[in-house]
Image (spheres, rainbow, N blue to C red):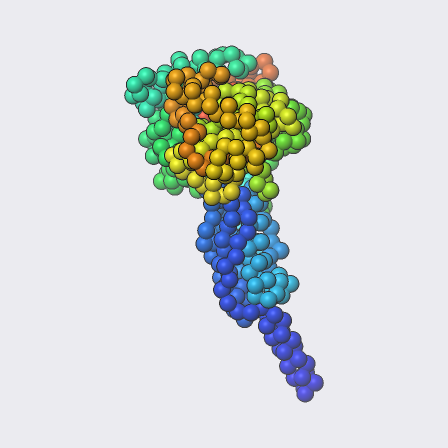
Amino acid sequence: MRIKAVLLAMGLVSCGLAQAALTSGTYVTEGKGNNGHVVVETTIENGAITKIRVLKNSETPMIGETAIKLLPTKIVDRQSLDIDKVAGATNSSNAILTAVGEALKKAGGSKADLKAVAQKKDQAAVLKDADTDVVVVGAGGSGMAAAIEAKRKGLNVILIEKLPMIGGTTALSSTAFNAGGSKIQMALKKPYTADDYYLKLKGKGPDDASLRNLADLSGPTTDWLVDMGADLGRVINGSQHTPKDGGALGSMLVPVMKKQLDKLGIEPRTSTKAEGLYVKDGRVAGVHVSHDNGKYVIHAKGVILATGGFASNPELVAKYTPMWAGYPSTASRGATGDALAMATKVGAALGQMDRSGPQTVAYQTGNGAVSLTNVRYNGAILVNEDGNRFVNELALTPILGKAIKDQKDGHAYLIFDQASVDRAALMKKYKEAGYFVEAPTLDALAKKLGINAENLSKTVAAYQKGMDDGVDHEFGRKDSRFSRIDKAPYYGAKISPASQTTYGGVKIDLKARAVTETGKVIPGLYVSGEAASQYGQGVSIGVILGKLAADTAAEDIAKMK
């Protein structure tokens, strides 16, 4: 007994020594996230982490915020930094883990000094088969629109998402909701109609009928979002609805749609992946899904595939859009083309697979690419290393992407001034995140960026003359938010294209029903957003087709009763 007591005492002393390696206290540290530094407060008591608070961050709503919400609790519960990062929010996860690791260093130790707590397996019951009217696969902008509209039409809805968070690529969008004929546009001094928007799209896709359909639906869909609470009151370049404060479209729109889901009682089933379609009696009648707690089937009268494009699938990008192979992706990590395999297995055809709209101004943070498209919407010009403009900065993304790619080393530079930063909330965030190079003069800016200073001065002077004359003499740019680029300090950013919007996907009819190669409708299957074969602008495609798919599903299901 005496030997056991001695051994026990030695064990306690040993344990105490291990814990003493970490000095108790509260430590404020930071890690580099996707959009800037994440500031974290870590409390250590008696050798253990007792509390973690994120004090400051500029991470993407619904994406980085998910990591911020989930990781601190996991670290405290498990007393370990060796935990899985939040899928789709890797950069934000790394920021938190780095910050906590720095706190451990300040406490005089490292993660090795933590005493990991063994985790019991989740005792939640294995999910069972479910029945519903409509199952929506994917909870980005398109899937949320489909779920909201289906519920409003009186249908029972189950919304699933393979990532731990909702929002998809829509949450990452910094640009605009494109439309024609909205109430906002029709109230302008010079109204912008659905016909105007159609003329902008005409000839850009493989068929004009789908573009006409998209244009006709765009205005009512914009009104639908505005009625929901979306801030789309600022219109630039005719078709582009943006938040009035110049902030990012996605960080405004996704919370608005999530609030609507909550109001309607739709709780997205996150971390739930569609493995394949369930077919019964020649009709798509549900989805096979997998979850940490098991696999099951959601039986439904209609399935809406809203899984996004394939810009984050390097293999598919290389196969179908090789021009952008090797470039970063600014799409959601979940944009891996899931709908393509599921739909083709039940006979659906694919279309436009070689067409894509690259994100044209991507900044490499070191933790992944960030879209800076909002910058050119707020008065920036694009120049090459010679200091010369080479394209209309507000041209369609495929045109812009190729134009940048054709420059030396496949990159270009955004040039703008303090006035551009002052009028847009997102620009201010980007500046704080350190995305911009700053200088007191244009010459100094050119030197920092490594571009021809003399030519840059000439380029800006020519641009200013165009402002004074009311016309862009070089490229015919039309922008109600022009900036003369004459208010110091001046800013620049080296940018390159990135893979984001893909137009290739499952062929659909004008009602968003999936079709075979011969045009035969596949009963029970609807496809929306970038999962569908549809030319247009990413968020607009998503929401317009999502709402359309739900309306069609409601019509078809009503006929079944």
